[in-house]
Length: 354
View 1: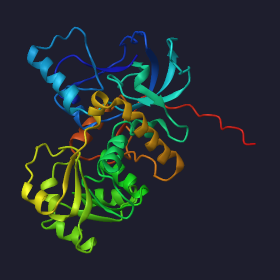
View 2 (view 1 turned 120 degrees about the horizontal axis):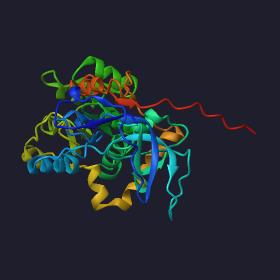
View 3 (view 1 turned 90 degrees about the horizontal axis):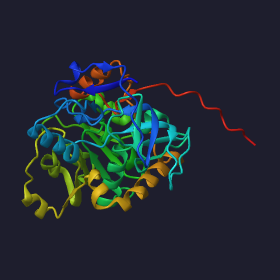
View 4 (view 1 turned 30 degrees about the vertical axis):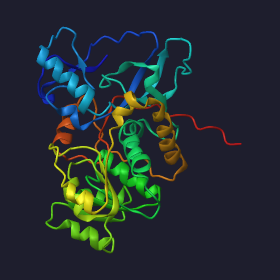
């Protein structure tokens, strides 16, 4: 089968597609899947260490490299997103999946034709969602939902400021906040991305945070109140606190800018605000029983039409030009969710209407 295989630490542009990689072997409790679409994540381009790529077993990294991989895999990288169709499943107690089921989930090594996945790592993909949309769903959407609903307790009519609002997790937050009845201000660093957040995400207002004093624009939009909720995957909470409302909630979602910032705690005190962290990957260890309810809530919002469907970047990549996709991600050219289409989905017959 075709697969991207890492033989050594290198830039992704130097990794070539392997066309004769062996099909993975099934273990007990796993299913074999055909991969149709795989999501590109921000950390996939870092240093040749990939959650999505396969590691050649003959490559023996040094102890330092092993530690680095463990750190990246367990602490930094987003879980891999992909959507897939079951090719065949090992029959074991508790497996409700059958050949042909459409599912989405997370596993290492999905930049390949097939992948063996623990049955606990996949969920049914609703018929109303394409494989591409499913690949943009697994990490960004539950992160945004858990942040806004469970952590910030967002209420209808409140003001939400979303930074990096055209990115994968940012635009999902814009869409969810709108669907939940909030008034959304999208913040980004270019007019193109502001337009994307408004056109596809449904943002009510936009601000360019590269302009000096942009916080005054937020205060003007909110009639001096400020944003009730700040959703920040960039690492600019300190700047956003200049336009947060009294008793506001600032969601620390990530540090895409590359720097872990220091926050002036006097503003936290004087404005009576809450700093709230959200690390979706941590729920897998600390609170796994909570995760199914979040996915159900997200899927219910999407399938009911209350929230618009996941936004996919205009250029869909393939295994043959995967390096181009990683480069586009690295240079911040993408918006929404960047996708690698591994194979085309066959047309599905429409259900008979009675």
